[in-house]
Amino acid sequence: MSTFTDAITVEELEFDPYPVYARLRQEEPVAWVPALGSWFVTTWHEVRRSMSDLESFTTVNPATPLARYCGPGNILGREGDAHSQLKESVDDLFAPVHAAQWAALAESAAREQFDSLVELGSADLMATYFKPVCVGVIGRYLGLTPAEASTVTRWSEGLIAALTNAGQDSAAARPGWQALAEIDAALGAQLDRLGRCPDSSVPSRLLQCAGPADTLATLKMIISALLEPAWLCANTMYALLTHPQQLAAVRADPGLTAVAVAEGLRWMGPVGALGRLTTRQVTLGGVVIPAGTPVTPVIAAANRDGSVFEDAERFDVHRRPAPHLSLGYARHQCLAVDLVPTVVAATLRVLLERCAALRMETQNQPYGFKFRKFSEFPVSWS
Ligand code: HEM
Image 1: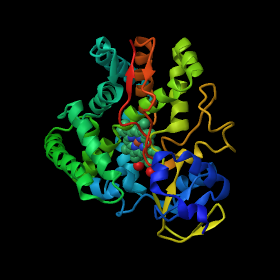
Image 2: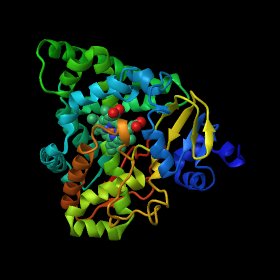
Image 3: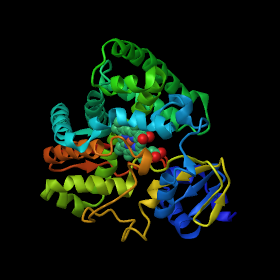
Image 4: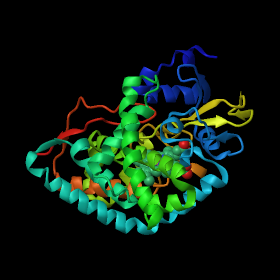
């Protein structure tokens, strides 16, 4: 084991993981990282294999925070037929054929939300624009109807605090347990109603396929993902605001916004590292990993692999096409793989159209490696 990987700390990954990833790709693409108790996989081909070799790697792991907080029956923690049936019960609702409808919903919500801010001249866009627009539009589309967007946002924030609480600190986990109790009460009642009167919403489809326990677990997993589009809005705006020529190009051609979002996902997607367990002894990148061992496919590192992307560390909206792994790959690819970029692009298009000059507080920086995000996004535009 090398001194370099022995010395990697959680703090340096949280602060800025990209220099560590560059060195890992170069020196040890499959490396045991003692601070995380997992094999970190950082190169494009090895990361893709750890996500697509279903005989050797699984998401089924009752020890993960996701299984512990959301329940082991959540869709991401299932494999085989149980997983396929859950996904197939709802996947037509997430097909690209609905993209025009998603864009229209997001655009109208974004316009309405920005109207309520415009006179202020400055705001924390995360709290006042990105979260209300994205959580509101997607939450309503999913049919999480008993709850206001602000309530679903609070649930999601509580779950994320719990899921990222690596040290299992009970104070940090409290908002997560509180959110889960509220979700159980609100969605439990909704599922009771849907059991009697099914409809075409996501909760109803899941319920008819999987029963109440796995439906609740899957809805909790989905609620935990609902802030990610808002984080992507901020990460992409950060990329544009720190690359003024590219921002100018997007302003000159609003059609480029979707490309900027795809490149934002590649360059700094909000989900950076995933979790797998080996099901058998496997050789990956020349390294033998025993069965039953945690593996971390670092999609954020694969997305900057220089053997796949030219000048990979650079944010470049003119890079076409921009494939990335930020929305997953193979069996567990994100259910919202088409929905998310559509909603985020519409949210950013309205913002750019309404603010001819947008300035960011320069000290504001992203944080985290499992999730790379801004907690606030203070800007001014007057
Ligand atoms: C920027 C926003 C988002 C990003 C970057 C993202 C990223 C991802 C990634 C990387 C995976 C694969 C996880 C793995 O293989 O271990 C995933 C799975 C998933 N995501 Fe998302 N996600 C986002 C938003 C959403 C939203 C809004 C929903 C709501 C429907 C959602 C629902 C899911 C589901 C249900 C899965 C599990 C799919 C399966 O197991 O087959 N995601 N997501």
